[in-house]
Length: 262
Image (cartoon, rainbow, N blue to C red; front, side, top):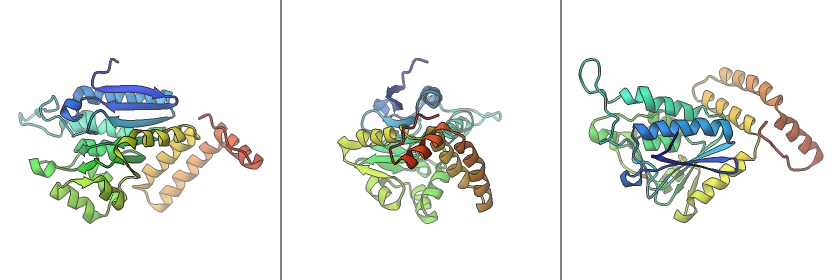
């Protein structure tokens, strides 16, 4: 695929996707969603970690309301949720079920579905200019892109509802204080910090890290018994990997492990 709305590149075993519509603060349209989906699929097949960032002064300002995301239902009435079913939700599910770690690097606005793209990361790195915004109530809509789930599990109920009902900006410093992000950086250090984390994970036991992601996402909606059953299943799979054999040997030999992702 030829990319016009994203930049897709590699830094060794790290795949990097940059949303690339800075003139609209990287607001998404259908073409951008399709390109992200394609690049994510390639990254999962060929890389060992994925970093998601935005070009320019924003991460992602949400949906491009002047773009091509609108739809009309069978009843002839506008259907603001159609694009969720056909495009955005499948992409969010793909990001949540990746077999490799996902790091997001957030500068400026992470609003609407852009907030969802940011918070779906395993590690969320934000610069001092970053802020998270759920402004749906301001235009008479409801949070989407999985943001209700992400916020209710990433924050307390009262804080999540405050963000969604009042539609106020959550600055990066407060997001760190609330436990919604992992790192807060100076503006110029954002991508280097995010890439360093991604590189460290890309050098790790890739299949094991993918299984950790799977177990963690499953645990968010599981009983204790179900979570332990998932751990038992995945532990057998992890124990059969070459990286486990290497990790165990390195431990016994008191040396650094040399993981290959196999």
